Image 1: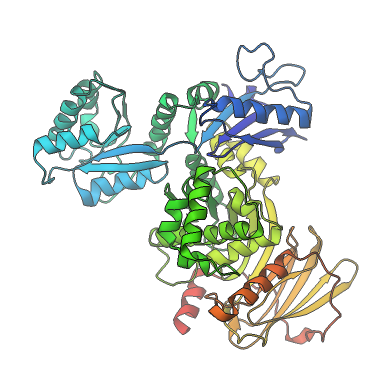
Image 2: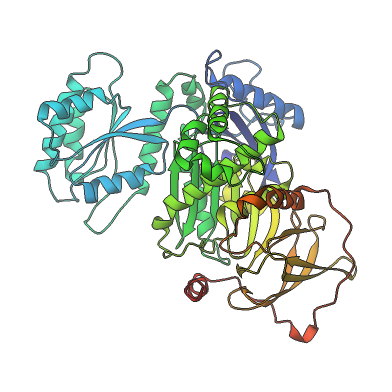
Length: 611
């Protein structure tokens, strides 16, 4: 589709539980998020037709906006855009629903070839079934049986630098060819080749008679260089073909989409590549998405997206595996009531049977939020070595921090969502927190394939929910002692002062969108980049402003105090807005410093060493 012909753009994300739909259109010459809707995903039996849920979401959106989307003639799903402003100019789709694609890795070396292949696969919903290298100790018969019995959806072949090794790779190709020739029932696995470019024609000639073959640039063109992006683009095409063959009617949606059916993670990577290049405080942005079947974390480091996806961690379809991974003990430390391991496991198994159900009681809600915290912590543990930011236990200074996934975005109060992020990530310094309830980031990342300008304008014009700025000083103060003395000027010379004590988290009772001036004085033992005084001009979010004096690293309450302390934190974040407290003693003007820049990674490293 020609770029100039596209006006309105409809983007669908087919999740394991929900199908989300976004409408982007021109408003005063700029692309904005105009409307969003959501319906249950209908990929699983008894419906087994994902387009049905998409049509439900489109009907809801048409009702909200009065904008006709569906083709009344039924010749295609969506009405093409016409002169009356009805229909859509482009339709794009992403998906994270269904079983992950099973991949068999074939490579020249484990240390270089297979490692690069795994880095490329990290951006897709895959499960690695087995590997094959020239030094495989199994007999040739066992190797062929492994290829045949793995029940893989794709064979990913890598190895040999460009103009490098050929013969060993050809020997591996011969084994793959033999295995494919023996497949007489079912669908043979698709082949993706991202190795020595000299062998691209040979791969197609030998394997195309048995299955679909995709080729792309070498993931390891030299011994010192990784080249992942071309392979990731080709993986999106393979994923589209895999989904089109899967049960659930994904092929019908893929045919409608201008870019096929793209993995949701690829959308995140594309959008984060742009966001990481933007100037701003901190290392770059950080986004976490906790879903029903999959969870991911993606960060902008040195202007590049670094991502980790776990297809075994979720709060619905994969809740049983998630609980096994993080252990019941880690979940129980966030619960303000007693809960034995057996009860937790029973709850997880029941939830897995009906993953779309919402928590029916407060206890069930708190269990899922506790599990979400530990899933995020598990993601951080996996991702930290890839960030290359040192071995400190503290989170590097990512800014902003964005949360996606219903368990994080649909809490009892926006400030509770902020607290979940602070509990799980434990950031240090000043950080802006955002929610992405409509999956906007991943959707705009896919839109960038078609219209990069739309992605830029839509992000600049809002769409994310700004929770507010969190003030998280480094260090600790004994519980109950004065930790953060806050003075906030807002409105028509109105003033609010408050002292946050050690072990407390406090939400300033301010309306969203309020321009404020914040002045802070920290007690001994706490600091922002080595400084104990700070002045900032900010705009409040839907959770106001948040001041966290619970310590970094976070000081968890003792078992005997856990229930009372956790309930106090939850009450502080979810209680209705109270009148401003009576003014306390003002901070002396002469003691305040000018506005400070956000913490730098170097400053954090120095402070960590001092601790």
